[in-house]
Image (cartoon, rainbow, N blue to C red; front, top):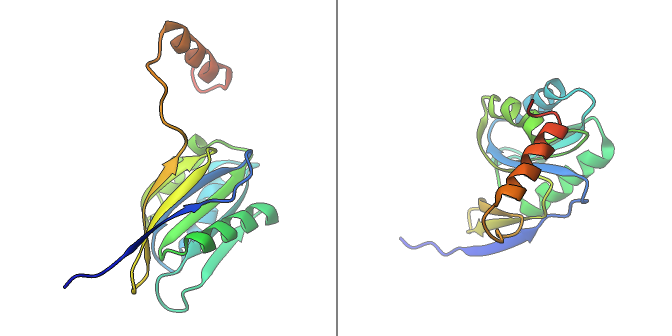
Length: 164
């Protein structure tokens, strides 16, 4: 049986100074578990979590410790509107600060991106629903890294405190 689908590209609406994580997970307690993981992983982080339920009431569930970030997560989750998709919008931390905590949440199946770049979400839609196929996160590369670029990169990660 052939099933028709439409492919849509959704541009997320996120401020330039906001980090965003998009992933796939599934269970009614997901939004609370994601909240706890973020809050524990990065003290002082301001964030909001939204999760699109795929069954039952099929609501967009949300939690957060910052109303603005929670609104960003809710708005973008509604735009994607694919069941079992979650979005975490945050400030005051880098993705590296929360990635492992999110990966350790039992309901989390995958993470599509964790970035401050502009994001487009590629979604397939059938009569049954929607699914995230992937994300377009940033711009294409412009060329190879040379020694001056390596030195600049190495200095930056050390200045940020991620390397000694």
